[in-house]
Amino acid sequence: MAMPYSFKSALQSLCREKWINILSIFTVASSLLIVTLTVFFLYNVELVTSHLPERFSMMIYLKDNLPREDTQNVINMLQKRADVSKVRYISKSDALKELKQTLKDTNYILEGLDDNPLASSIELRLKKDFVTGATAARIAEEVKKIPGIDSVFYGEKIAEAIHLLKRSVENISLIIFLTISLGVIFVTYSTVKILFYRKNEEIEILKLLGATGSFIRMPFLIEGGIIGLMGGALGIVGAFIFYIAVTYRLSMVIPVLKTLVFPLEILIALPVIGIILGIIGSAIAIGRLRL
Image 1 (cartoon, rainbow, N blue to C red):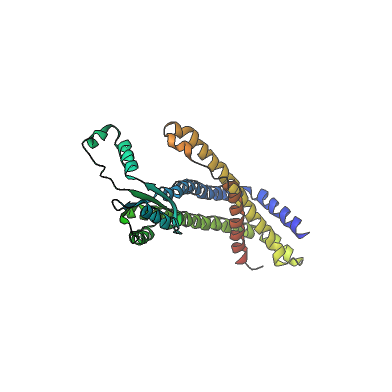
Image 2 (tube, one colour):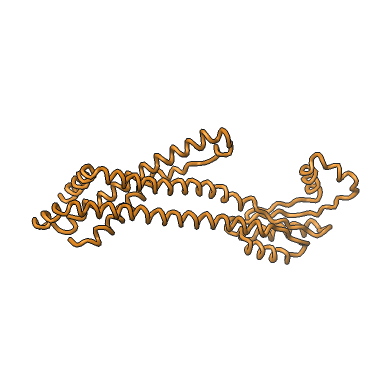
């Protein structure tokens, strides 16, 4: 009996105090819209950065005239490493072909060469978790000790930049989410507290009739959850309109925007987050009041 009454009381309060609740809903919606747009942006950045480690590679140059058996031994040792995802051997002739393809119209500068000056090499790709400046440096030092390897070249700064970019994306998303969440909780807290004082006489009557504190508090918790739910739903609508405007309108000017992806998980996550934050704000508001 308590739950139906609580829902009915919460809905009546939302309708009776509609203007303050509408204002709160739009405030929560705008806050959650910022969260959604931030997640949308960071989600697409994460998609890009997640593929960056796959493109990072170390070039291992072998000693001249290294026997085929020794070359295969080097390849086998590299393939056994737990931090390596892919090993590709590049012979001297293949390296020269790739260089000519890179130079294209300017490959005439190689015409005067009688011998192939390039060394045989191995392209080493690391697993995602190992693409950091410190880890790449450690792996390079260990690889140099393998017999038959002349030198190792890797982009230490590139590896560190990839790692820092991914870490920055994670930290920024966390900071923004926590900041906006506090804002949503404060809005719900303020709204519920005002509604509580406006229903002071009604609450006193319920207390005289023997109503428990939890019975009185429940409608306010439900009301906070509904405010959060509606704010989350409006936030999704605003975010989807923004996504359509960016991908269909602005992409005519900036074609790369067509590749942006809208995370469908937000469709479920945002209303749920709104409900949780709304209930938390309501719980804080009524928890500080004596019943």
